[in-house]
Image (cartoon, rainbow, N blue to C red):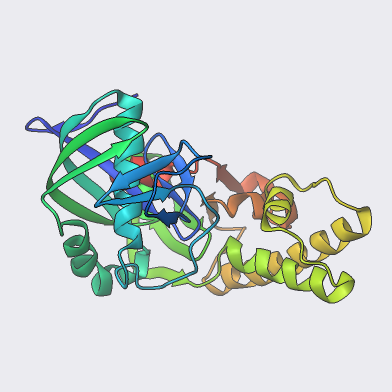
Length: 296
């Protein structure tokens, strides 16, 4: 486990996904349950500000503006808790490294930074341990670019970087490792939209409310423990969705003959399973923590 510091301050990244929260070393869903009393069944909970938060409980509803409520701040404290617990550290001075969607940097950077810095000191309990943390600062980086920033010299010629998350898709061009300023996009077109389409298809065809867990398992593995007819319609809908996704990528200017593509994020599996792209021209990065590592 690598450790990056500036003047003794630990740099700790949190990638605030619309489906999952990631640090450099941990992943958990962005849904939680707030309680006034200590949970009986769960051991994965945070005690902070007089409340108990049971973590990894489904997914938070999509919200373009992450500072509209305190949920993503609670999730940030939970991410810090998980990362410090893993490092067996209880007191730490931290500089947060976070990100926002590529094209929303100008409109969201300052407000998200202020949101992260709302408390200079935080105290919480996680897995029976008391943690005391000083937040010394916060840097905000662009998603997608952060994931490849350490490896820019490796991108020779023209490359398209595509980061498909749960809620958004970020895309950008690199020319010999340098960003092309007028070739960057953020679209509300992530894995969650595909899952919702599948959910609606199954509801229309079979009048069955199929759990998200089954659909997500299918999207990641192209198989699920489910009736073959259900699986057929899941695959049919996923392929339709990927055709739409592919059309967007070509609209951005991707050309298999003249450039290569580098795909990351949870949606990379969608393109691997269901797209018709020339595989010799694509690199898939399935490291879900890639942006968090890049932030650090």
